[in-house]
Each structure stands twice: as structure tokens, then as C-alpha cells.
Amino acid sequence: MPQMRRSIPILSALIWSAGAAAGPTVQPFVESEVQSGCGCNFQFVGPAATGKTFLWWLEGEDAFMRVDGRLEKLSVEQTGGRSKKRGVISVGDATSYVLRNKSLQVKVSTTVVQACSPENVECESVGVKASAVATSPSGTTTVKGLGTCGC
Image (cartoon, rainbow, N blue to C red; front, side):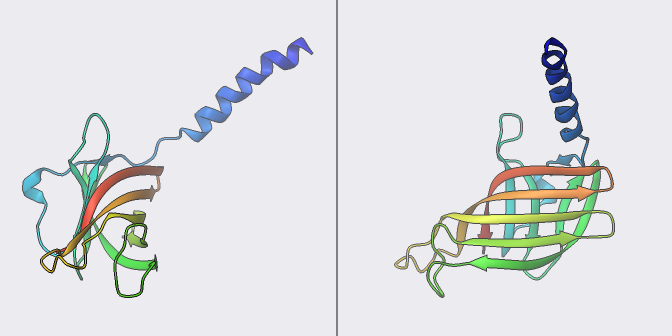
């Protein structure tokens, strides 16, 4: 039995290191690289990069993400959505997207955390929390953030 106890920490370390395989590194954009307009824009949440954009796209156009030092241009496809009220965007509504090019696929899941009130006719965007799972030949990385979608 004593040998079994010693092997558990070693086995745990091997499992942890296998799960921590290197994946793509998602990097922030310089503010001047991000275009404004109707679409979606996502920022990092965390001590080092809070508020810095890591993913964005304009409506009907390709998305952009900086990965491993390269600017990646990705096609955007909405793959799902769940709405509490038909025709009205509400807190808790969810939407998913798949962004891809030849070397990178990013699955983005968003949940509305701030919606427009029906009385505010000038409000054209919603606040969302997002999870982006980026997969490349080097592995997989998950980035969590906050953002806006709309105009």
C-alpha cells in the first residue's frame, strides 16, 4: 500500500501536465487595429489585460484575432442561439459562433448580461460575456471575456 500512495501524486502530476499542453496564445490588439461599427467586440478579463480587445468582427464581415503573433482573419458563422422572448434580446439569451480559417478554429459562446430596455429606442448594442475556444495545430486555448454586440 505505501507504494500506491507515492504513485498517486506522480500520476496526478502527469495528468495535470498532459492537460496543460501548450495551445495557441491569444494576444490583445493595439487599439488602432480595432474598427468600430456594427458587429461584435470582445475584451480580456483578468489582471494583466482587462479591457484589451482580443477578438472582433463587423457585421457581415470576417473576424480578426491575434494568435501566436499573427493576425488571423476568420470567417464567421452563427451556429446557434437561444432567446427567452421572440424578437426581443434579453439578459440570459445565448448565441454561438464558429470562426475559422485553414489553421485556426474558434468556437465562441456568448450570453447577454446587459440588454436594451424597450423604452430606450437609441440603444443598439448588448453587453455579453463570452468564452472563445481556439484550436490550432499547437493545441487548444480557452479565453474568457466581456464584450458588446450590436451597432
